[in-house]
Length: 173
Length: 417
Image 1 (tube, rainbow over the protein chains, first blue to last red):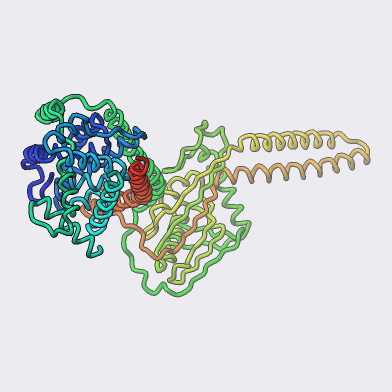
Image 2 (tube, rainbow over the protein chains, first blue to last red):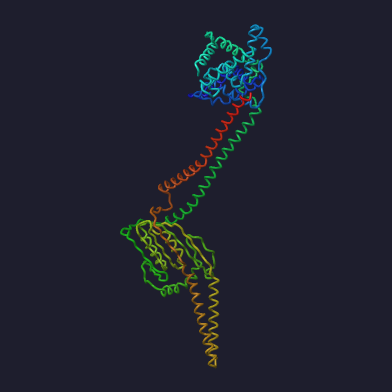
């Protein structure tokens, strides 16, 4: 987290602020991508540790801190996927589904279960785009920066992923 | 991006922002809201643990998987730095070694230049000039450097005979600046000495330097066996001398020839050969021949028959011939000992020879040395760059390829899920 004028000033404070604003988003994204809570926790911790170690290498001219952090998290998650080379289990907890059903009613619960199931059937690239958009809350520009593609390509990727998800939901219902 | 896709994405962004959307995108909006609500939530224990680690600034020991990687990275960095340092050291050693050889030659030149040249005008010397004296018709020069006689073999022989008595005394003579010959007891060992001297001079000073050579030969009572001087004023001018210098004066003669005004010593080599055995053998044969002659003369005095007289006279002629041959051989050897052969070549060079103003420290010498140091340093740096730049390019290419491969494998990991 190096600014152009004062590279070292407040690097810890900036990192701490980044951690507090992005911790849950990073975990949500990694968890959706890996579909394994335990692995997601390890990768999230590793991502923040790497970001802390490399905070002086951040160059604001190359993008926002948030996108930089998610790039680190993505690399750590992909390394984890390469290491495991196996399919992760679904991240959703059964009790969460039950809780949602109690609150929102049976129809909404069914709809959420269908979305969850459909999301699990999507290819990893589509699931990643959806996770970055809806679970991590990234804008289209940040999403493009994390994936290393243009913003137009990122929008197209997200649109197609949503179309696939909608068709998968219709198929499950 | 298709307009429909752009509109759908805009509807999604509006939904997430809490803004109303077109009814056509109601299903998409509902899907977006469900996805947002379905995001995984961090567990409280993990959140607390991570908060604590962050508060400690990750001070706990690194993950076991990271440590070897960091050590490996440090090893690679250390190896690369060591390799680069070794390459620079090797290049420096090679360059300095190569420069050292040049320095030796340069030192030789400086030794000559240290006692050399006073500027002297060589006006009117640009015309071609060739002086040649055939071998065996050596010119003997007096102290004034002018030829006393263009003598033939008899004169040279006479000179050799005259100087032969001093030959044994000069047998143990050593060269002033060259490698000292093996020390031998004076008057016992018979040493033949020779030397070759290569000089350089400006094209317009060839004949001037050549005249100085004649002067030195005259001062040292030597003989110019042959000489060729070609002075054209161009870099192709040259002069060759075959000199015969009394061995007793060889050291002084070489010192004088090495410090001629306007000339620089390019190379100098000295050689010695011990011919004590040959001289002794020739002397022994001569003594035996003389003893035989004396014996024959006694027998001739006592001879009574004509046949005996004729036979003894025949043997006496053979003995005389043997004595003359042995005497000639002995004199030739003594002449070799008494007179040393010196070959001098003068080559014209375009650049003026370096001028030395003595061994003291001067600003000019300091600037010259500083320039040499800078040239050597620049050369070392250039060669080091020539080595390191390709290595750096290869390393950069390897690093780029490694990163690309790593990125590709990471992307492939997505396709495996």
